[in-house]
Length: 435
Picture (cartoon, rainbow, N blue to C red):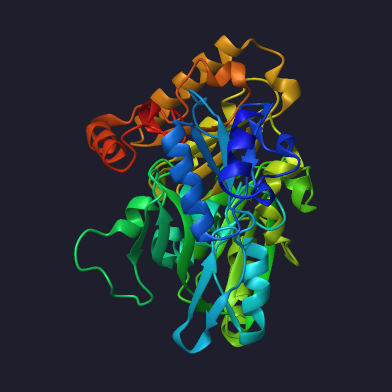
């Protein structure tokens, strides 16, 4: 192909991925995928793309390429998967500097001997194998249950190296906690979905590994009962839970839990005595609420890959204030109309994920599903919340904006896009408002 030939001539044939079809763009295999092995090579690749007018799709390990709106055009996928070494770990400063293609699981395995970790567990993190790549997690601002206690990527990234659409490489933030003396460019690129630049390297804020990590699985027929109990646990005078998730019966088997009832899994991190005391109090509160409680080795790491396990046709992400989680959960459980969908709710974060199976999706045309999503958005808006279509078949994504109404922020976001990527090279049409 002309693009592949141009890359081979200008750079190196080793930059090209031998099996580009492994990267799916809007349900179809990518034609050309390049994976630069250095930041300089990434820069040169983007300069070439800008000169030739190619539409570039940034990617990490390839797990998020079906998210967002359908692309207007995609000529070249640039994956950061070869930007993975080395990991610079500075344990005394609780800091690590990593390349964007480093898998989250690999990062935490490297940090573990020093008793540290980067405490993110993104739900639907993409790429499998432990939550996807660091660059993709930052670019999508992905977070999971631990965000309730440790925050999101916006809280855990100190600095970034970013390659812009024209190939220029810039640095934002730095290696220390207090480094902003103007606009916080780190937060600008975090969650920008590769529309402003391709993240090449990140300086990460680390945390000590907790000495004790234990979980309870609590089960009841009613999701509302478990949501109420979760709020009670959060108000405990003893150690509050670090994370909590409610799983509807169709979602529970993905974590090896009983599918006959709704499950609330709760995690405590901290000193052994504090964790033990908190769990004793949690069992007491569960007994008062007539909820069954069992200490279990809950596979929290597998929660990041629940989408891969369920293989849904549609994934929706609803958000609102944490106190509105009960109502978000009720809307999610009634969304499909027929069989109850697989639902995962984070009661401390005000986030609910709804997974619709391929079989359920096939029972109605895409137009009907688009109408259902619009109605869900209207009902969620009454809670001051939003609904994002994370993943869906191409026929549905062609009918409905994945992000919903961007509100009054769209002119500002468009101005930023025009500033950083005036020719619309990066992820053309993927983001909010078709940016």
